[in-house]
Length: 286
Image 1 (cartoon, rainbow, N blue to C red):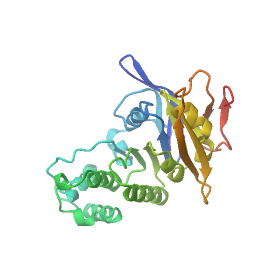
Image 2: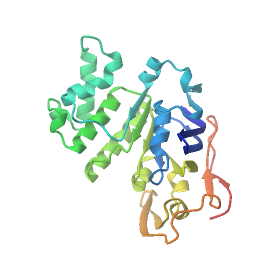
Image 3: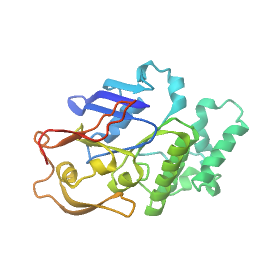
Image 4: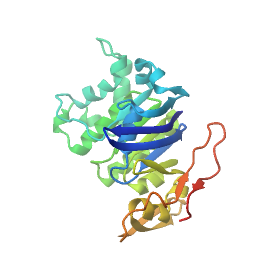
C-alpha cells in the first residue's frame, strides 16, 4: 500500500505539486496529464529523489521512517531516460538490479532471476550484447528488466514505453499487467497515451497544473468533459467490445484548456478498508 497526503513540491519559487493525495493498493495506477502537469515530479517524490511537503506513506509508515536498505528492497523506480553508453552487456546491466543482494560472488539464484526476466521480456538473445549496440527501444526494455529483476513490491515507472514501437508498447504493458497481478505489486506508471491508460490501469489519477483533477476508474475519469477541460481537446469517448474507453481526438479546442478556478474536479480517495463506490464531485457541473 502506498499513499500520499497533501503532497506539495516547489522548484525554488515555482510550485509544481499542490496538495496531491492518492491511495494506491496492489494494482496498476496510471498518472496522466498534459505536459508540465507534475507527473515526473510526483514519481520522484514517491521514489525519494525529491523531498516534498506533506506525507508519503508506505504500508502506513512515513517514507522517511523507513531504513534506506529496507526501502530499497521493496521499491523500484524507472526514470524516463536511461544511459545506454555504459560499457556493460545486457546481462550485466540487468544484474545490477540485484545490487543490494550481490556479494563479491554472484549467486546462482541471481543469475537465474536475471535470465528469467530477460526471457520473459524477449531479451535473452541480447544477453551478451553491449548496451551501446542496442537500439533506443531495446535499451528501454533492458531498463524495464533491471527494474523487475529487483522483485519489488512497489514499481514506479515514468513513460516506460517512450522509445518503443506499437507492438513492443503493447507487449510491455501486457507484461506489466500480468506481473502486477501475479506478484501483487503496487505499480504506478506515468504515461501520455490515454488509451493505454484506459486498457491497462485499474485506477487513473489526472494531474493538471500540479493539482489532482480526478481519481477513479478509467470509466469515471476518461470523459469528454475532462479531455476538454484538462487537455483542451474536443474528443469522443467510446467503449470497445470489452467496455474499455477508447478516446478519439477530433480537434484542439479554440479556447485552449480549462480554467482551474471554474472547472469540475472529480476526486476519489477511498479509505483502505472500504473503497468508495464512485467519484466525489466538487465545484461546478461540466
